[in-house]
Image (tube, rainbow, N blue to C red):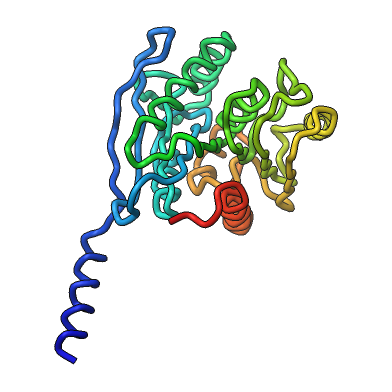
Length: 263
């Protein structure tokens, strides 16, 4: 009995020591932009595990994107919230956010280079299995991960949450290498119905393995608890706890379908 009690105490002690580790890592893209990534992993998980890139909303690399990286780490993945604007900058004002976003998207090659720099950084981490990489994105980030899939980057899957669906470079048959999950708010007035229809038509034509989920009544930014405070700027956004939880459950199943049960 004493031995059993000692082993139980040892197990509890080790469990208490295990935690989500985080680190800010500076890196640079091919266009010379200095960026700051936010890396998270569970140190109780042994060895390399699938890696997930997290791409922020149009606000930039803020606490919400970092929290999602920690959430993924808690599920057993290696997660890196990447910086698409440079210098880790972020804002809470729509005018600045729009300027940051437009600057990042004005050159498609530069945007791809910034994403790829983050991808390579995640692959280099010892906690990451470089052969098993997926990406998720929110709002602006949803567009980014969908565009990277359209351009044929080696991603096992991408998931977009209340993301922008329109693109200047539609997917072609065979270009998308992995699966696609889109979580869209049924009450999202910032992504019009014709964009939804065009996206589905594009995916069907390109023969992409995709799932499009509509969260009933949910507005743009439905996963972000901070969304409600932005209503003061006249934005038709809002947090929806039910849609947030359901879409996260969908993501967990999506990742299991791609990679199997995380360690």
